[in-house]
Length: 228
Length: 185
Image 1 (cartoon, rainbow over the protein chains, first blue to last red):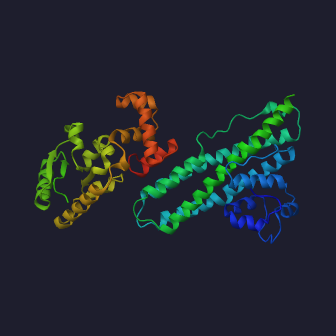
Image 2: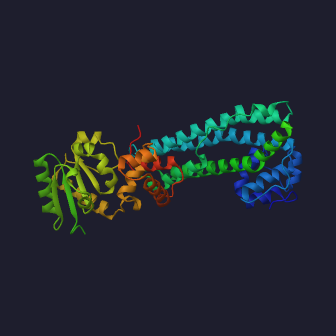
């Protein structure tokens, strides 16, 4: 378990998967020997929320002791928005850049790479629909709840349009790439696609976990209080 | 290595069929060859006893629903024109070539297809179910089409998912597309 008096640099050297997390909290590299508490103060971040997010990332069974406060709910929404923005601005282009290079570099027109590309586009569109739902309906609704707007709970949006878990679809896509790729393909680019998909899958899983374990219980509480 | 293997040559063109059969007999001793005008002539149990189906491109298109579940045993042959029209991941033998080159191609394909597992350990029935799931059919529709119970369809699906380590319905479609069981268009 990671605590507030630990050095941020040591924690990250040990758990490199946390690199994207600090990026989403907008923490820049160069934090020297500072403790987590110190870094959070400098960046005006809620230390308890920061610790909850990183502990949830590295430990499947982590449970936060106290439910999120209203301020923490707003900060969590901001973190999730940053996650979505990074998925759209850097992770999608990253996978696509490698896939494009893979398609144009393969010796002859490689059918299986085309199939991988088609399914990636399908998954991407589905994720974009989910992100749009979050940005346009779910997050504004949560913001209204947080600001104590009267009757906000009555405008609860319908459930998300995403049907099958997207992280599992990416898992399937990744295993197709690994098991059934045929013909000539640049192996370096294949690795790049594989790892980019793996990172995306992992980030989406974490995103969902933050929603399930931290955000949704707090939102349910806010709704109950508002209805009273 | 090829001894005691059984090969079915399937073409509606008798001259082509006779030619291919004698070419095989001359070059690969000890293999059993049967010439058929259509794969439908074979019963299920007969069909399973063959190690390889050499199918002409036109008959492949006509009977692909029968042949795809056995795809690891199928090799399609035809001329350059049909090679260009051939949109599947199955091996293709182009007949517009020299005799020695053609025999070499057959030799490579025979060795390859015989050493391969049959569809990652899926049975013919499981491959049929997988293909229909990938095409978007509902369990009930699959049961009707294959003449099996709903319960059997569900148990096939569970087995396929666990054999292939697939988690989602999209994964079935991905598998089928990657392995040429369906074409994406």
